[in-house]
Amino acid sequence: MKQLTKEGMYRFIGEEGLPDYRAEQLIHWIYERHVTGTDGITEFSKDFRKHLNEIAFISNLNLVERLRSSDGTEKFLFALEDGQTIESVLMSDDGRLTLCISSQVGCATGCLFCLTGRCGLIRNLKAYEIVDQIIAVNRILAADGVDGKAVTNIVFMGMGEPLSNVDQVVEALWRIVDFMGISKRKITLSTSGIVPKILLLPKKAPDINLAVSLNATTDEVRNEIMPVNKRYPIKTLIAACRKYPLQPSRRLTIEYVLIGGKNDSVDDAKRLVDLLKGIRCKVNLIPFNPHEGSDLKRPPDHRVLEFQKILSGHHLRVFIRESRGQDILAACGQLRAKTFRQ
Image (cartoon, rainbow, N blue to C red; front, top):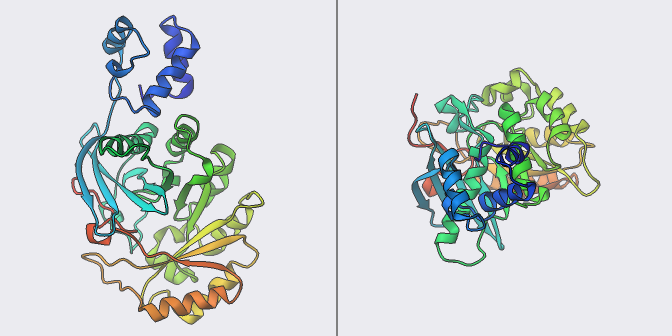
C-alpha cells in the first residue's frame, strides 16, 4: 500500500465501499504509527483487517546492518524488495535527529570525491522506498525504548543524485510533509547541479531547503572532479542559483568540499567570493573525507581556516562542516552499500 499516492489511497478505500476517513486512518497508521502490517491497524475491525490482508500488504525495508560511530552517528544498511541495498545515516545534534537518506541505488554522477559514484547507477528508488527509510529508522528508534525519540530533520544527501530521480523524490517530499508532518523547513535537498531540475523543483515540490554542491571555482577543476559540469558549467549553475526563488528569511546552501591542492587555494576562495556575489546563501566548507582507493587528500587545517577567513571577510556566512561517522564510512562522500546486485 505504500506504493499508493494520496489520491490512490482514497481511490483504493472508495473501491472497497468505505468512507474517505478510512483512507486518512490508513495513512496515519502507515506513516505516523509505522505499522508493519494490516493486522496492526487496531482501528479497523478484525474482519476488515483480514480482508485487507487478502488484497494488499504493507511493504517494509529489511534492516541488514546497523553500525554506530564513536561520535554517536549511526549508519543503517537496508535491503529493498529486489535485494538491492541502500544506506541511511542518523546524526544527533542539539536535540535534533537528522536522517540522511538515499534517492537512488548507486549514482551515475561520478563525482571524483564520492565513493557512491564508483558503483554506478543501479536504479532509481521509488517514492515509497525513499520515505520508508524514515519510517524504518523511526521504528528502530521506538524499539530502542526511548519515548518520543524520532527523526526531526531530513537531508537528501545519501546515495544518489535526487534531481536525477526528480518525480519520485518530489512525491516522497510531499509524503514526508503531508503524511509524516515533518516541516518543509527541516528538509534539505542537495544536488550536484542538474540545472533544468533545479529550476523545476520550486514549481513541483514543497518549499524545502536547497543545497548546491559547487566544489570548484573554475570549469577546468569542476570538470575533473564533477563530470556533471560538462553539461551544466559553473556559469549556468550560478545563474540558476540566482533565479531560484527564496522566501525572505531563507538562503541557499552552497556546499564546497575542500580537496588538498585541488580547490583550496587563496585564489579559489577569492573566485568563490566573486561567484556568490548577490546570492543570498550560506557556505558549508567540507574538508574531504579520505576513503580507500582515492588519491585525493584532505587539506591541512590551517588551509581550511584561511579559506573560511577569506569568505567571511567578504560578509559571507561560512561554516566548516566536520563530517560525522567517518570511522564507519558514514561521512559525506563515503556512502556505498556493501551489497549490490547487478
